[in-house]
Image (cartoon, rainbow, N blue to C red; front, side, top):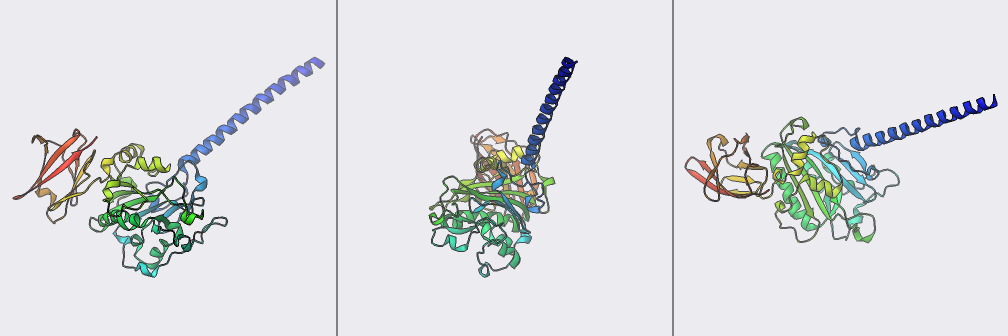
Length: 375
């Protein structure tokens, strides 16, 4: 009898151990699944027009304090003393006549207790500008909008040559897209940090080694549902150094993939994967060089995917004729272009690497432009 009881207890013990083991395995699977889901979605609670294309996410969310404002969304990093990124929507309606001279750089008191709250004086005598991530003029419709851009959580150390030169020229470029071409933009911007030098060696505000910006271009009123593999994306990484003031901003074009590699963030996470893979990898979806000839602008140049020809006069694109020629003078036939407003877009993926000549016939006028196709 005793042996039978021992045997039963032994069997029950084995059963309970197996059951406990199974429960432990299921528990860890659940934890991993929950973590995986959290990592994939990151911030499902962020609902804003500014992050329509995705809320940027990396592998470590502990240094991302998300601030949602009517004017923009940003991720503040308490360890850097600056924001990791800011995201904002931009169209002509966001621009106005409010005078920035009436604004002052202001400590962001909305940060939690325990965060160092950067002050205007932290930048004094540092040799660096107080560089806006979200540009003040892009929120100039009223006092509230513009003052939001002067909060120190929207400020990043930039050299004067970067802030007042090549970076500003890029901002002028896409401002014209909004005002002159009535485009709808979705923008991400921030810094890339490697050396971790700080303002005045005080350890409070880290100086970025370079600054990035991604500008996704839609026609006015379009949103995520309208994105496709032909959607234009302008991406730049610019060094935060002296001596770049007079550089062409097109010198620093890059791909979204390069920015994601440098920062660790996934920016366009709401974009369908099939589209995301194309527009994030192709430099051809960014402007490399803008060349103006007579009444036309062509970009990118060089390019590897799409070529855009912008009319800057009032003539309709339908009444002009455009022909492509190889360097040997042979005419090249391309698929029919897409026409949107005053912009004509050609798919040049079928062209092999080399130099091509473009002839634009408009009544009795002929424009000759050169294009460099790269792989």
